[in-house]
Picture (tube, rainbow, N blue to C red):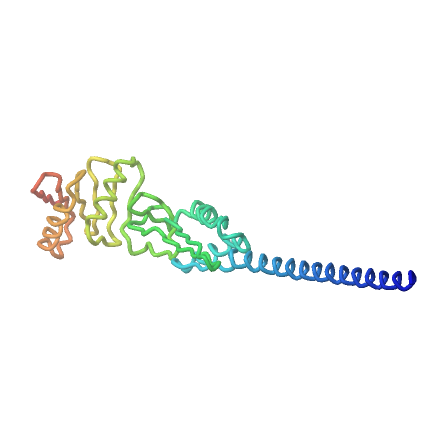
Length: 241
């Protein structure tokens, strides 16, 4: 009888052990599946929150250089892409670039827009131009040939600022014109003909209007002359011998 009960007890023990092993196997299988799912989810989450593309707009001639400068962004998390610092470094190295505006989009794209300086005059150094803020630079498109010449020799900051103000208020300047700002109190305009125009140090819009009227009345007169517009509301025209 005791052997019968021992056999029954042994069978129950074996069944409990098999059940326990099956339970642990199920637990381990579930743990492996959960871990794999978590890893896949983390990888997908990381990919969805990293920079995957760079789109550049604006000045076409500089776009490839900016795209190359911003390539370190690729693969970085969106929140620390470094796009702003990279674009600022690109701008500092290129005087022709006024600003680079960047935006990081949630789907992993960095947008960058290049704004270049607008030249208002040529300077005497070959191929260079100057913008309204007085920054001298090399225009990316080389489009300075149609602009007036700003002569900087002997000038100071005040003279250059006044000369640029005169150019900006002229409305339209011709490539054959030369603006001399060596005397900060008397900005001079040299016209073909030849004619020298004394513009003084301010109130330029009214002086441009009087100058245009004088040039219309002068017509095709080739005689050299001096046109003095420094006196408020008046114009003095003197022929040169």
